[in-house]
Length: 259
Image (cartoon, rainbow, N blue to C red; front, top):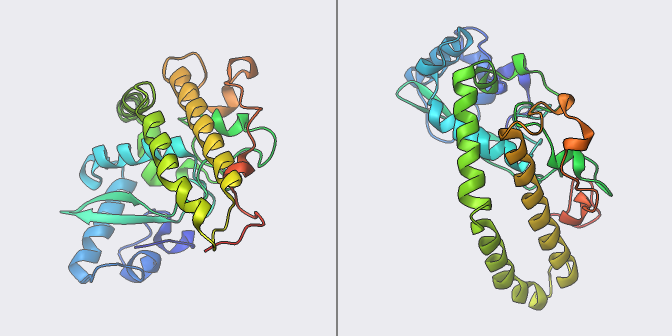
């Protein structure tokens, strides 16, 4: 399916019953043609997941990698937010995985942290407490990771690979700088651009700093120097991001036109 808005019709990926009609948010939004056999495989996987059999129901490696990246970028207009939507559900041989979709309000743009002034809350969001406005029991596709020491450790390993291989290696800096240099001339020349070159540059600088600080915080959490649960963090251990205004990257409710 595409984006889901209703928790009660399958979007939460909680098992309801064996009736395909109970999962209208999944099957009514199917991108590819499905038949009864396909639907029953998905339902069987959801049932198996509800019974604690993640290994049988889920492509565990793929879903863990999905959440490692997803929880880094802090997109709450999603499965980890209070609407439990904006993802693709993929089934293969009876196992489920999730594919990313709709990240225009990532990096705290959907109510994650303060939209102006201080991004410290967003930057230090606990990697083990990624939900906003939702409880773990209502998000079974995340809960099976959080509830298992083995899977949580695997999730931490993938996050560590992301931080070391992309941020600490400086690959992120090279990539974002290259994109900025490539795009800036087009922004400057575009007569219908929604943003000025100055606003684009400010957004680029803010995004670059935000991600760099987020990577620092995640590393501290992985190393045990900062609690991985937001509510358990000591203020003095957190990475300071008070100089960042999330709204400089554009956020929900901004006064700019949207495509």
